Structure formats: structure tokens, C-alpha cells
Amino acid sequence: MIIEEATFSDISPLCELLALLFEQEQEFKPDKVKQRAALNVLVCNPQRGRVFVLRDDETVLGMVSVQVVVSTACGGDVLLLEDLVVSPACRNRGYGSALLDHTVDFARRSGYKRITLLTDSLNAEARRFYGRHGFSCSSMTPYRMLF
Image 1 (cartoon, rainbow, N blue to C red):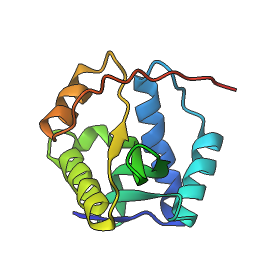
Image 2 (image 1 turned 135 degrees about the vertical axis):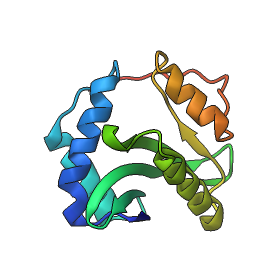
Image 3 (image 1 turned 90 degrees about the horizontal axis):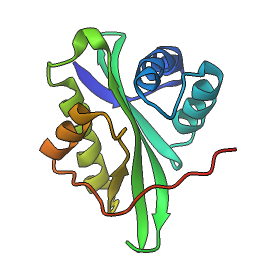
Image 4 (image 1 turned 90 degrees about the vertical axis):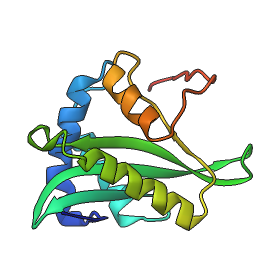
């Protein structure tokens, strides 16, 4: 298994993984056109964010995406962890932990000051997973305005 930055040729299998992820969430629905457009931006513009893939030979087994945001509170760039998903057949093997650890290491080496993420409030397994990896629940409450 290796973890590396996604390439343009990874976008189709990444869309499949994102469809699995969004089927679990209350607020979002899979939309391959939207997911393909966003992944294209991230893969082709590393200054906007990164997509890391976990692969076995040429097969993509999991992915994590992060986006760069400027934080006035932190005084610099921070990351928003947008998506972390592992193929259902490959879960419970430590692959999600490997992707998350890789992302945290990347953030530290690159000088980012914080990683923020959101989880579905009903997804207790995800909340436990992130807690085991040192993330804590914030007192901040997200609000959204969708267009």
C-alpha cells in the first residue's frame, strides 16, 4: 500500500468513493459532475488543496482531501479536511488511520496551523475515529447557506 497525491487519472475512482461517502450523510447527495469538477480543481491546483490516495498497485482503495483556508485567528493557512473515505471492502484494516496520519504529517511538515473537519452528527463511528486520532469537538457550531 502506498499513499501519494492523486493524479488526474484518479478522478473517476475518487468520484466513486465520494458517492459512497455522500450516501451516508444527511446534508449531501452524490453528484458526479460536481465531485469531478471539485476534484479537478484540487488535483490540478495544489495551492488550493490536496487529494491523497491510498492505493494497492493501480487500484485506489481510499482517499482524503484537504483544502487551504486562511485563518485570521491562527494568523496563517489552515486546512479543512473535506473528505476521508475508504472502500467498504477495505475498511477496518487501518487504511483510514493511515490516510489521516499522512494528512496530519503533511500539515505539520508544511506549516499549516490547524486542521478542521466536520462529521455528520449521527455518525458516532466517525466521531470516535477522529477522537482516537487527537481531534476534539469544537464549541463552534457550523451554519450554512446553500445556493
